[in-house]
Amino acid sequence: ALALGRASEATGRRPVAIGSSAALVVLAVPATVVANRGSLLGLVLAQVLIGLAVAGVLSIAMLGEAFPAPVRSTGVALTAGIAAALIGGTAPWIAQILVRMTAADAAPGVYVAVIGGSALVALWRWPETAFRDLD
Image (cartoon, rainbow, N blue to C red; front, side, top):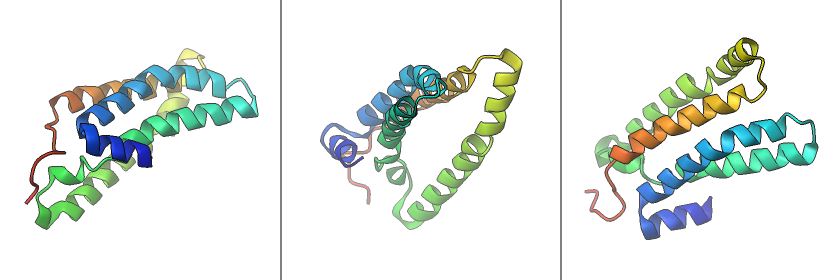
């Protein structure tokens, strides 16, 4: 995560976030398939790959820079809390429904890829904040 944070300082927030979201889209289904095969090594590899993709989005200062200084902490806390509740809180339930409906063990990976794709759409419109004064 430290390397991704440094990369966001050097190249900007958007390229790191877009690259990480794209990695999530590409890796979600294969990681789910590998994780479901029952191998401890495969499970660890899948977790590391997906974790790195998620860390690329979470390790950058982009969200904090979207809010003015007087409300920055509140803005980040509310945004992160709402996102965690809506996406993270419902993910196991949605994954279970998708597996039951499709009988495909990879269905949760498709859900994660769709979320990553939605993030890509949002990030494409997000302004770069790395090289501007935030005061």
